[in-house]
Image (cartoon, rainbow over all chains, first blue to last red; front, side):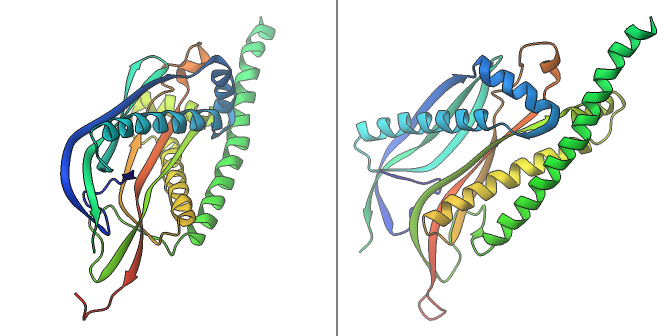
Length: 107
Length: 164
């Protein structure tokens, strides 16, 4: 499965569009990470726990989107976008969406 | 009485001092690190255009992403809290945002490098707020930036004027 956030794929030609596919996930952070974060808020610096959390969440949203694309019989997703929304305190929704397409390599 | 006042003032001053010294040190070290990594990655061209440059042949390497969460320090947060009352630039937060954006971009470029790309097209930034509304009294003023950069990594080869 090819995933890009451009409308076209270099070296490939879009044959068929299968429509919009999407995936989301809602993640909450846990107390341990909260505590570490409150310490980091004194001296600044990167919050690695949160970074990992977000990477995991982003990957999950993307995977769900790809599963949908696969179901539709697509072999690529183009024009992928990510958005987030705060659904409740301490939790965030990560949302990935794109257009599922069937592509063929250009001869 | 004066002892009680002292008990309230001393931790506050210590925290501000800690934020100012350690936070400042962390920030300067981060900027130095960013500059070094940006120099190393300078040969990868970055654009937010969707298309590829003219007179090049592109080969797809895949979508690349970079992500970072950076916390403010006590001093920055304190200065910003004061500034919020009187208005004006929140300069202490501006550097925080800059660090987060550059770090996310550098991480994205590092994964592009791993894929053997020399160009990243259609770069987008997104920020999320998973940490908003932390529990606890002190944490309510906590500020952190969460930045996400993503783009499409390509390997471009020059095809010269004649071929276009």
